[in-house]
Amino acid sequence: MRITKVTTKTGDSGQTGLGNGERVSKNDIRVDVMGCIDKLNSIIGWTRVLANGEIDVSLELIQQDLFNMGGEIAIPDVEMNLLNNSRVEWLDNLTDKYNEKLPPLDEFILPGGNEFSSRLHISRTECRDAERKLVGFSEKEYVSDSHKQYLNRLSDFFFILARVESSNQSIKEVSWDYNK
Image (cartoon, helix red, strand yellow):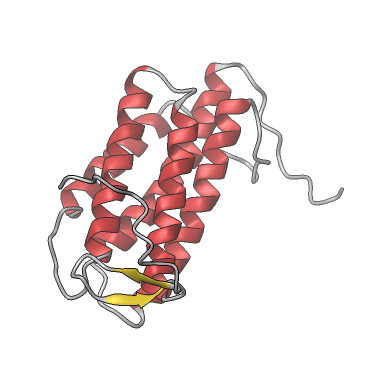
């Protein structure tokens, strides 16, 4: 694919094109889901500017996976299987690897820590939003189980990674105090 012109003016009337050429309202639930995934991907990119090493590589792979997911959703009635169970397993293994470094939680923790862990928490909450949109969409249209599983696991990964960052920087986690 070669993109030579970004502004086409074809969306000025409130319609947008899907990957199969079909025109739909920009308010279509499919477009909304694609937008949530795109927003999540952008937030991960914003988060990556503070990452390095293996974590940066993992976040880039996640961004690639999200582009694959968005691409599949953009083409109705075609299952490309770009984001499949092997990617969910990869994410599960990565999450387990980082979780092994952490002590168990006794209580919910407040999002925060430092800039990087806070951005990871924002990524987590945006991921949950994208997951909710995807589940709503799946009630009307076919969505691969691996897509739903991936977003579900991804939010857990961001939570674990935020905790790892706080631990690595010796930042004390603040527990939720339901008496305050």
